[in-house]
Length: 171
Image (cartoon, rainbow, N blue to C red; front, side):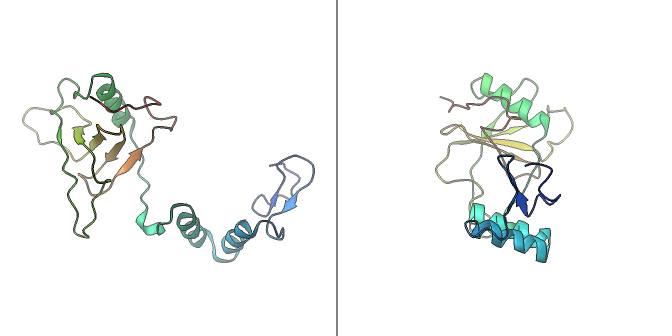
């Protein structure tokens, strides 16, 4: 995008640096035009809701954005490097059963071989906190939960924050 697109990067786009294109009026951009009009007329809340539904097929209020803390990534890195074992001084890993919630839906995809891990070391005489990593040994997929399985944030295999780009199933 270049600066001479009328100081309006939401309406004008110039991917090649030649001439700004009005994204709202360009007939070849019907979907973009609809979403940008919604943003301009109804504000960011309505825009976000529509974009979420357009991209994911799920309502925006069904989506949860959960930041993954560095300590969770470091714990996952250790787990991956040590064939699924918990770090020394941590509570041992255990099976995560992926039971349906009150709404009847399972929090994670069915059919996984899930293990749960604490992301903090165990301190003698204290109870465990609510933060966990759940790792699927079959697929190599991983999730972070900050609140003991009420919400889950996927730890993407492709994110620059992931400790390893190619998670592998643990045998």
